[in-house]
Image (cartoon, rainbow, N blue to C red; front, side, top):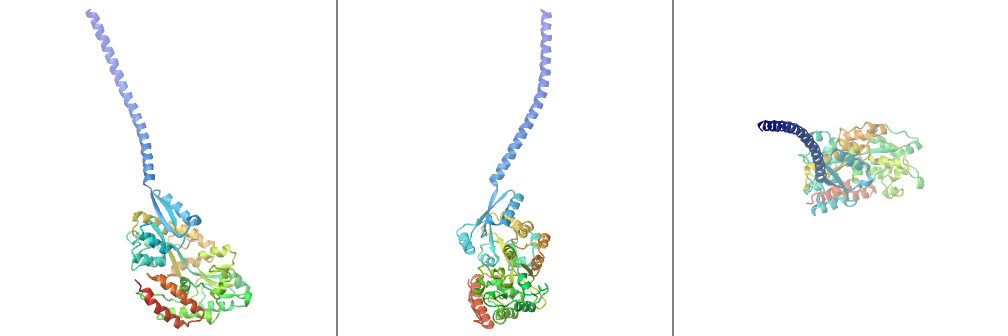
Amino acid sequence: MKKNHQKLLALLLVLLLAFGFTACSSGKGSTETKTVEENKGTEDTADADTSNVEAADTKEKETLKVYMWWDITTSIGLQEMEKKFEADNPDINIEWVTIPSGYADAMITKLAAGEVPDVMMLAMDQVPRYAGANMIMPLNDLAPQEYVDSLYDVVKEATTINGTMYAAARDVTPKVMYINTKMFADAGINIPADTWTIEEFLEVSQQLTKGTGADKQWGYYWSNYPDQTYALIAAFGGKMYSEDGSTSVFSTDPKTQKAVKFMYDLYNTYKVCPTGVEAKQFGDHEMAAFMANKVAMQIGGLSQAGNLKNNGVEFTALPIPYVDGVSQTSSFVNTWVIPTQAKNPELSWRVVEFLSGKDGQQIALDTNMGLPASKDVDTSEFLNTASYNKYFVQALETAVPYPTHVNAAPFQTMFAKECEYLWAGEYTPEAFANTIDEQSKSLLNTQ
């Protein structure tokens, strides 16, 4: 009995040892298995977490509305900008909203009603008006110094009011002189050198003005738009407004007076320009007479080159003629701004900085939207495309911005109307200057 009991105890001990070994082995295996499962679970969790992050990113992705007057479906430049920006900024979507007509006034109404975009396009002549009404925010605290330093001086001046930066450039439109090479060749006249003077310009204009009736042609023309007129005022070093903005300076600034007298003489003394009615017989486009080989020279911006090419016009371009040893042009700068009530100014600035900085402005140049605001943009391919493109790039250094004023709109309307009378010879330059300055006092000082 005792022996059986001992056998039973021995068997029990063996079983216990076996169980213990199995338990240890099982424990190790279980631990390893658990680790793998945990790892697998971690991987699954990581995948889930990544999925959640992606879901969160998608959920938290900001859609910023950019208001403009262009149609995104027809603007290759904006399409390329959107693609590049969203690739570089996966947390932001851009939604373009087009206001096709009456943009400047329509946006004032929308902002007043609480419809606030994150970014909006704005012509430079509207920037003082919006800034004065506190509808757009200063950008000084948002724009890093490196960005500011990269801008051409004409851009900095055009987007700054009393030392405060309120806008960033969409593109820059310095003016050059387009030359109808077919008309020059037909007349046996050589294209002037790029150092030509205003006296040479006048001489060539007279030589190329000839014919009567259907054969009539002219040496020069410009549309009666304030910015077109100002291009020659700028060439003479003239101004439009006094330093304090209280009046225009047509009767007080000698260089402005000289420019106005020169333009008056082009029409009335030398008769080298068609009237508006004569120019419009060839079409409504501002360069229709040039494209019809009826006008030999006309000031214009980069966008006109595309129009001329598309219409099969033979042309080149030159800098604005030298006046008193200086070739100076003017430039319009369309802009991007951030409304004062924008929900997230930092995100809005990321859009604005891209659109107006090196990458966005490279696209603007490459798609012929306009000349770049940033000196960091590579212009080599643009320069190689056409020999005259160098004059556009040079103009970025020599251009002065088209003058702006908080009450510019009513002044410009009045100015264009009075210019029609001047070009028609119904005013002397002196009477014109006095009339403009007198009317400007009430128009420019309207609160």
